[in-house]
Image (cartoon, rainbow, N blue to C red; front, side, top):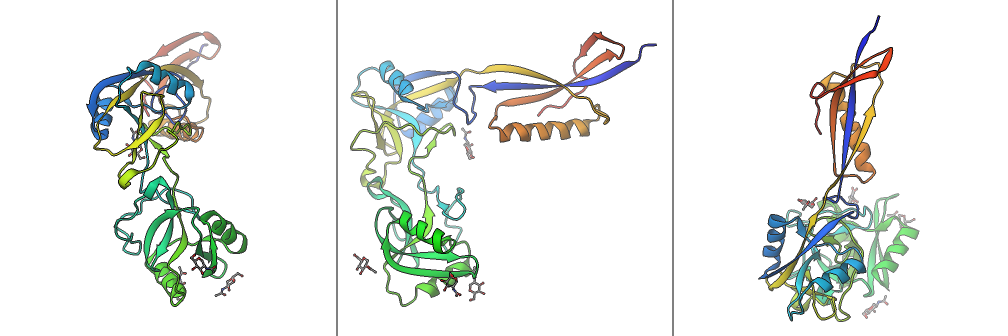
Length: 330
Ligand SMILES: *[C@@H]1O[C@H](CO)[C@@H](O)[C@H](O)[C@H]1NC(C)=O
Ligand SMILES: *[C@@H]1O[C@H](CO)[C@@H](O)[C@H](O)[C@H]1NC(C)=O
Ligand SMILES: *[C@@H]1O[C@H](CO)[C@@H](O)[C@H](O)[C@H]1NC(C)=O
Ligand SMILES: *[C@@H]1O[C@H](CO)[C@@H](O)[C@H](O)[C@H]1NC(C)=O
């Protein structure tokens, strides 16, 4: 007697070259010979191709350089400097410092990343924030989590030296995460006479690319970036030697876009379980756990699909794929 068994087959489609955080396997590059502002260039690339280019290494930089006609104006690439991508030393994750926090107030005209050198934050006049060169020496404010106290250290130190000191003797450079914290800090600074005092706020220079992938490769012209007039937060590549400069978003330049060439790999998984694998709920749970796993491994471009397979227990060769029976798409 043959017993028919239905199993569900899980298909994972791995796509590569798309918008994953991993370096791309294959990209096509396009030089657009039209002058546009940075915002127009980004929209143009997203509409006609995938996005503005990300340059991962000198080979790609060289390739783009060799593709371009020798024009005097350069082209937009995807790199930009986000003036609001601040992190607290204590947490090291990105968060937005907006006008929504009445306890975090920027001094007039700040942050301005003057000369493209200001990536650390000091309290100015004891209340307002100002981005300052990380190598400048100021007194600093540590936070001690054991006795929830704020310690003003009256020694002039660079931001990193201050951070090391606070991490060694207390917890870290202080954060300002609430009104209470702010008022305790104001109290600690009162009467000290300090003009600038380091706090734990900092950011990474030129850390983002338009397509959200990451690349640490840079090829700046020796005199760049300089954030001339404090308005240059977007990168262009020039056609004299392929080096980069910072530009204002409203400057016009040609454009380098890319198209992701997607490759597809299919993984089949056969699951054996006591549970009823035809249950949509169970399928969804399995799919969710799998996507969680894959995301934690850095895989972002994939689809998960269920397929129903009929087989006979005592005759494994008689298998038949039936599409559509077990359906879950993630
Ligand atoms: C908290 O502990 C630190 C480190 O031991 C010390 O320097 C500081 O004076 C203490 N503050 C208070 C208010 O107890
Ligand atoms: C820190 O530097 C400032 C400015 O140069 C100076 O006025 C102050 O006396 C210095 N403070 C200490 C504690 O050395
Ligand atoms: C701030 O100070 C108040 C009063 O001294 C204290 O109760 C509170 O725990 C402090 N809050 C923080 C976040 O340090
Ligand atoms: C990049 O990431 C940001 C924040 O996570 C998101 O808002 C944006 O849509 C993403 N852009 C692209 C092109 O994926």
